[in-house]
Length: 133
Image 1 (cartoon, rainbow, N blue to C red):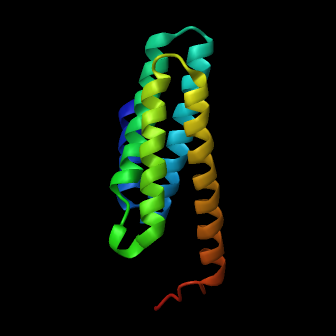
Image 2: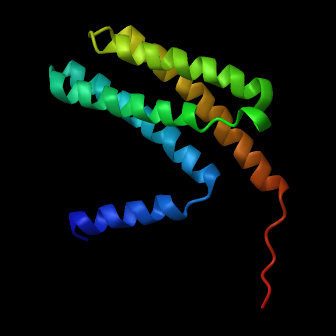
Image 3: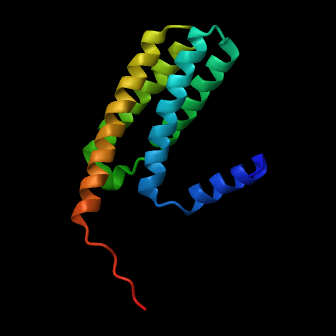
C-alpha cells in the first residue's frame, strides 16, 4: 500500500470507528508518543523529542476536549484536572525534565488501563447484536 493509501486507510478507520474505539486509540497514541519522546531524548534528537511531546500534548488535549461534563459528572471533572495536570507536565518536559514526562505517562497510562478494563467489562456484559436478515 502506498503512503497515501495508508493515510487514507487510517483516516477511514478513525472516521468510521465507534467513540469507545477512538478514545482507546487516543490513549494508545498518547502513550506511544510519550515513549517515543523519551527514546528521542535519550538519543539526543531534540527536534524529534519535541515533535513527540507536541503529539502527546495534542492527544491529551483532545481527550480533555471530548469530556462530557453533563453525563460524566464528578468523574469528568476529576479527569479534566488530571488531563490539565498532564498537559502542564508535558510542557515542562520540553525543558528536558524526563521526570515530568514520566509523571504524565504514569497518569495517562493508569487512566488508559482503567478505560480498557471498563470497556472490556461492558462489552462482555452486553449481549451481541442480533442480525436481522
